[in-house]
Image (tube, rainbow, N blue to C red; front, side):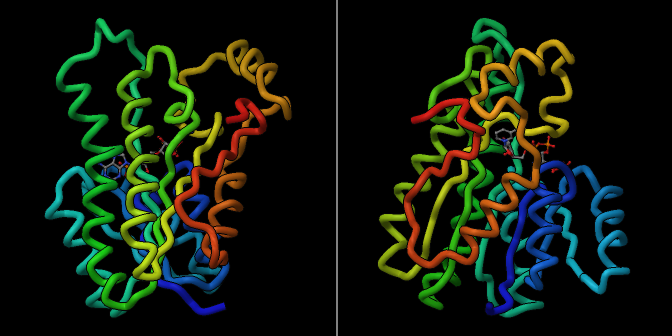
Length: 244
Ligand code: NAP
C-alpha cells in the first residue's frame, strides 16, 4: 500500500495516540498534533523511535484557525501532500443544561466542531487539487442518540456527523472520501470520572459486555484508510451498546 501522509489531531493521548501508533506501524507518515500534552507527544515519539518508526509532532490549538493553517502548512512544506486527516481531538463536560454556560458552549463547540471544520477546510484545498484524499471524523454514539447531561457534546458530535455527510457529497466528485467513526464507551481519560460500579453497570448495557479499547477504534481507522469505496457513512464502533 502507498505510504500516506496523515494528520491526526489530539494524537498524544487516548484514542488519538493508538491511531498514531497503528498507522505509523503500518509505515505511514504521521503528523501527530497535540495541544497541551507536549510531554506525552515527546514520549510517544521516543517510544516509537527504537522500533525504527519516525513520527512528526506538532503543537496546535485546533480551536484557532491560524494554528490549523500552520499545522497543515508544516505538513505540506515537509511532505508536499496530505493524503488523510483524522479529526480526533475533542472534549466533553458532564452537566445539566441549566448549569451550562456560554463559556462551556464555546469551549466544546469550538474544539469538537469548529476545530474539525477548520482542519477540513485547510486540507480540502490540496486534496481537491490532487483529486485525492480522505477525512475521518471521530464523532460519538452521543451524536447519534443524544446523551443526558451532555447536551453540548451531543450537539457537537451530531454536527460533526452532519459535516461528514455534507462534505462527502461536496468532495466525493473530487475523489475525496469523508466518514465518521462513532465510538461508544472507550477506556481513556475522557471516562476517568466513572467509578468502578458505574463502569460495571455500563458494561451490562453493552451487548458485548465490555468497555471498548482505543485499539478498537484504531482498527476501524486502519480499515477506512485502506478502503476505497466508503464515503458519507457514520460507522458505529460501540460493542452493540446502541444499534442505529
Ligand atoms: P482524551 O483522552 O480526553 O483525549 C482528548 C484529546 O483531544 C487529547 O489528545 C487532547 O490533546 C485533544 N484536544 C483537546 N482539545 C484540543 C485542542 N484545542 N487542540 C488540539 N487537541 C485538542 O479523549 P479520547 O477518549 O481519546 O477522545 C478522542 C476522541 O474520541 C474525542 O473526539 C472524543 O469526543 C471521541 N470519543 C471518545 C469516547 C470515549 O469513550 N473515550 C467516546 C466517543 C467519542 P492535548 O492533551 O494535547 O491538549
